[in-house]
Amino acid sequence: MKKIGPYSRPDSLKKLDGRSKEARLLKDVRSALVDHVGGAPSITQLALIDRAAWLTLHMTMMDSHMLSGGAPAERDARQYLAWANTLTRTMRSLGLDKAPAVARGLDALLAERRVRA
Image (cartoon, rainbow, N blue to C red; front, side, top):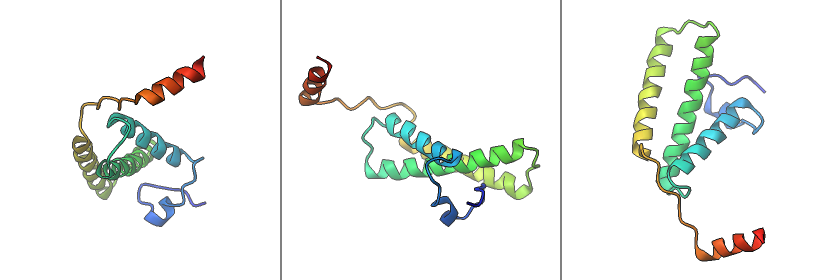
């Protein structure tokens, strides 16, 4: 498969398999943000979480490019700043404070206790 970069086309990003660094990063960011919103996100929260994960991926790839000695072009600097601002607004929309965990029902607690016994 072709190497994924910060400016990769959406169709190449759809082909990420779960073993690549990029796919693991997406999965980890999504998982952390789902936990951050309380574990049961609404559809709008899921859309924001997906957007934040993709932005994080693109910014991470841009970071790697710059750290490997690639001097950022003016376009790269503007794009990075735009992604950073968009990610900030997306995170603010999700909420800065972690939501309390969703309380489990009595049936779930009793079932868990039976399994432990």
